[in-house]
Image (tube, rainbow, N blue to C red; front, side, top):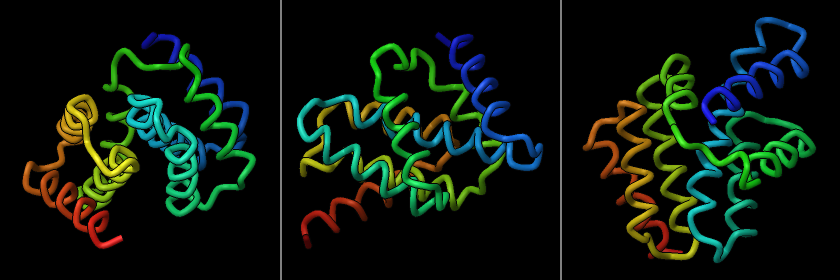
Amino acid sequence: MFRKFQKWLRNSIESHSPDQDTAPERAIQHACCLLLMEVARLETTNAEQKRTLVAQMMREAFDLPEADIAAMIDTFSRPENQLTSYFEPASLVNRHRTAASKAHFVEQLWRVAMVDGTIDMYEDHLVRKLSDLLYVSHRDFILAKNKVQASMLSS
């Protein structure tokens, strides 16, 4: 699966981006969408609501056209594209994002996990694992979780 992801990512970068300056940004967009969809796929309840939230986050973070976002979400929601290792997409984010933006990304992961108002043990485990791979401090991990929980209570 890891080689399959690398090959797919390399092909998608080459086919979407003739300009070398945009290739890393395209790869980061795909990595972020892929990780968000990994959290979204953990529960089948509220699947459409999670996809909508991921689309909104991608739109806000990257200012992408709707067609590109829809294509990414459709691709990454397919069972055959489920990751067996999160290392490659997390390392892409690590190489190109600041500590603050990675902490914000963890907050986004929590938002996807909490769409239904609860966090199950699998969602908690995955967000914790991704936070560790992104080298987000435990303090920032907890602050992000608490911030999202507080916003859910006030909604």
